[in-house]
Length: 589
Image (cartoon, rainbow, N blue to C red):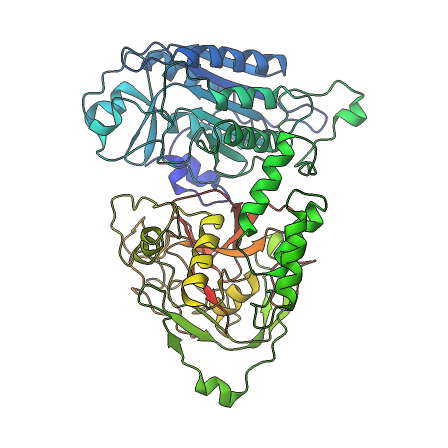
């Protein structure tokens, strides 16, 4: 097991790191010193099978761009496995704490035992047993980088093409294995985990070309460069290719600095706002992405958010009409911001079913009563603060369990959902569906709403945490301490599962909800905010114009117990699919 497999989403302790390898030199950079800039670039083209004519030239272009940006570059081209190992070792020897780091690999790669291996042009991969000997384990690059504690690092793998070896190594497996989010280290794939990009005659490498254009832009931060790359690739391939990013890179990694006075040049751009409508193709991509997420909504607040971002957008007239329609339409679904319905009386609550199911293929729902609670935590992270009181004014129904593969597959079979995610050969049925994006989850709730005539949606953060706590104010729903065999996570069980399991195998919380902690991380409706200082206190969702990052709650089987706390929260971009992420539905009364 590699070092990074013992890490949480935030990072490793040095003790964990030392258990696996001797670290490279960790020289501290002085306050007045510029951070070290280190890069590893490998390009492999000359494969006997499935040659990649562009890979080596792409790598040379990347290496030259990085050198011009002041990086100390270790480069290898058409390297055999031993040469790649030497390059990785040289790179590891140069790493320094607080460095800015770029790793770029272009060539073939295979997935073996949920790890990625870079394939040398002369590698002989006749069976799975050949992989560790004939290919370079990516962990030999990643593990020293984790130990070095970079200020900001990005690992770019242009290695998502179909290849002739993968099927013989692991039947049915495709593409790269996902890399979990690690503190200050972002992984970037040319295609999402488990997917490939088909090569063809005369293929132009849109991913490498667009990333190079972005990082050559003076003063452009890597986080913004990746957004630009992703949007350009999606547009150029007509949405056929989706760039995947494990997490936004830490701010400050700029490949091509701006030549200006030091007082100005030291300022970095964290994440520029998307251009407004009318500024060209890039603006169109932002606007279309926003519109696609709300086009079937009956929530007037979502159309207002679109109009705030794009007052003169191409859909502005339609958005204004729908905003007015759904604000005034009798019997229309209420916008979640704010919840205005009065709390149910005790007699009315008794008359309501505690659990129900609206159709044979619909998720089971549990009635959650109205009430107030203290949201957030002062225990750990700034983005969980401040603790504040929230009042949920109306009861609602919440999925008793996370949406299952079986329930999701019904949506696909009936044409409501377009993507059938892989179950990673673990089985479908009652296991929670994962590898779905926030946008996918909203498509599912829209389909349920159309099928049943009821208003389904994702819960807000406040509604989710209120339901998870179920009247408790402790760290976990069951108490202040981690009790074994209460949830599916890393460190929660006597025997690690390392995968999702069928729902209902651990005790429900006091509201009767299963797996609110662990199993699959769950999308909620809100935009990400760095704190709760400006979020609503009425249970409604926090929204922001053109927001890309959405919130996940509850932690997953792949997280340690810190991320199973009732207050824990983290984020992904709305269109990212990841093998730990699922959701549960909310149905309004």
